Structures are given as C-alpha cells and as structure tokens.
Length: 430
Image 1 (tube, rainbow, N blue to C red):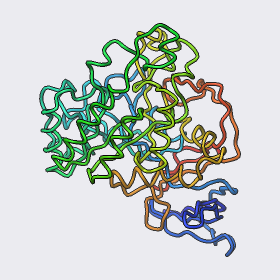
Image 2 (cartoon, rainbow, N blue to C red; image 1 turned 120 degrees about the vertical axis):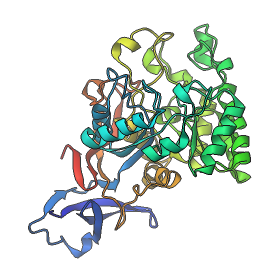
Image 3 (cartoon, rainbow, N blue to C red; image 1 turned 45 degrees about the horizontal axis):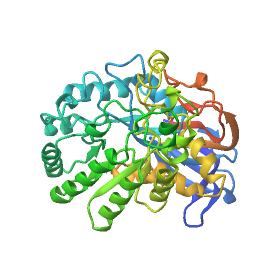
C-alpha cells in the first residue's frame, strides 16, 4: 500500500497556541510521521500527496450524539446519507442514538448498525444501546449482550428515564461493566404537550413554555444516583443555567459526571426565534439569553466537556406540520464547525485550539477513543478546513436527506474541505 503525504498543512501547536506548517505521513491507516516544513518538502516519490496549501489540518472531528434514523426512519436519514453528511462536515467518528424502529435494544440491531456502517458508511459509527426495552422505562435491556455486540454505552435518548429506581438499577449495572450511562434529562410531567421554552417568545405568542426545571430536575437526581453507584454518567445536550450549576457542583465533589452542549444552544436563544417556524423547534428547546451565557461559561470552564451536534433529521413533510405538531430536531453535521468558528473564534472569544479540543480530543478522552489526536501512532482520522472560506448556508446543498435547520442564509467562515478516515479520503473539495 502506498504511503500518503499531506503537505503544507497548518497544525495547531497547543503549547505555543499558534498554527505551524507541517507535513504529515500516513501509512497503514496511522499517522507515521509529522515533519517540520522548515526542513523542506519530504521525498514523496512514488507516494500519494495531498497539498493542504496552508489550510488547517486537524484531527478529525468527533460527534458523540447523532441520529442516523436507521433502522426504521430511512425517509429522514440512513447510515449512508448520514455518514456522507458527517464526512462533509469534517467528522470522522460519530455515535448514534438508539431511538430507531426497532429501538436499538437488542444485539441484532446493534450488529445491523455496525455491519451497515462498515459496508456502506464513510465514517466510524459507534452505536449506543437503549437503557430500557423499547425505551419505555419499564424493563432494563440485556446490558451484557449489548456490550458484547458492540454498544459503547446505554441511553434512552429521546425520552428521559422517569423512574428513579430504574435509573439507579441501570447505573449500578453499567458501573459493574465499566460502561457509561448517557442521559436525556427531561421530566415528562413538566413538558407534556409543550414545544418551546418559557421565555419571551412564549410570552409574545401566548404559549405555555417548557420550564428549565424539566431538565435540571433529572440532572440533579441523576448526579446523586451516579455518586451512589459510581457509574460514569454523561448528560446529553445541556441547555439550562441550573443544569450547568448542578454539573459543576457534582464535578467539584468528585462525582464521575461529564456533559455535552450543542452549537444551537451556544449561539441561539428563544428571543432569536423569528416566528412559528418549525425549523427552530428542537429538544431541548432554545432557552433564554441567560441560559446561553451559562452554557458558554460551562463549556469554557470545563463543566461541559464537549460539543455535539444532536444531528436530528426530519423530512420536509414532517416539519411542514407547523411548530406545534412538527417533530423536534434540526440537522447539524454540515454547519457545526463553521458556525462555531465564525461566532467564537473569529470574534476572539475562543482560540482555535479551544474549539478543536472540544470537538476532537475531549470527546475522545471522555469516551476513551483512540482517535481525536494528531500524533504519530494515532489513527489517521483527519480533517482539512479552509479557515478563509466564507459561504452562505444553503440547506439544499446538504448531503443529509433532510435540511431542517435554522441557519439557512447565514454567512459562515471556516468550512471543511477534505476528510480522511484511517488514511482514506472519504470527502474532498480540494
């Protein structure tokens, strides 16, 4: 097999907090060498070469919360289109949620996802399995069999586990197997039939809103259960100030809790919703500006460990049902990096290194993945990003089957242009 050289790539030097031109050699799917450009171009005779031409070269982005809708909802997305969309967005590893049909609650469904991703997918796919059978909250799934089949953790994402004893039993079992529990935190008694958060948008439109406590109550309950059981407890898509406060306190006393936040909760509040547009309907809903400030601060101080997209595709027909009846969720793969680069790095709020860390090495650290590092010996899962490229978001160009996004028409800078998985190019605009 030929070696591949990526020459003239700008790599972020974390120690010096600056970009430096490097040449990277890839052999057998691994990073074999990283050479200083000051020493000149390497001898690439007989080898394949990609010239990054001064663009950013990063470890591939990692997204630990996505919905591929496969099996059962292939009209929204499937493993093929979902991984294409992920690759275009610069992601090389994604973790898919189990609220499929059938629910990913059996070894057979886990193996179906892994086999299809291996045969037809463009990026690495890590499946979560359900905590309870059919995500009904009544009976635990067979954790041991699901782990053996390849599940990386347990979650009933899409619904919160309502019964505290059921959640404690799940955590204790997962802890005994050194597996994480990943929680969608939502108390159903506080949200039934509601579709936007409490705040100015709800007030202006005469709507009853979803209160922040609906999320934070489960966070508070679960960190105490995690303390009791010793499980690694991971909080999905944190969106409220109260949740951030509880997670921060839990970390301070040594509870094994980690957490994630989505780009839309970092850049949008309920006050930005332009009207009864279902492309602005998501779960958790957009919260108040105070909550946005809190999740930004939580990400910056390490209370929230990583950024995820919660890529949640729905068909145009489903979203056309209107704000009240349309399903929750927006797509996120293809806008995540440029959105955050434009809003936080270009404005000077974050360094480029901070954003990359929260999208690569931090999720890899939390979930003990081999990827997420641009180092000799690491998997050659890499992304080239043009930090000078400004484009207008056009949902009609998405590779996802769905285009439900609130970011259509936004001008963003910093677009991925090439993605490699195990040293193989899976997406390229170069």
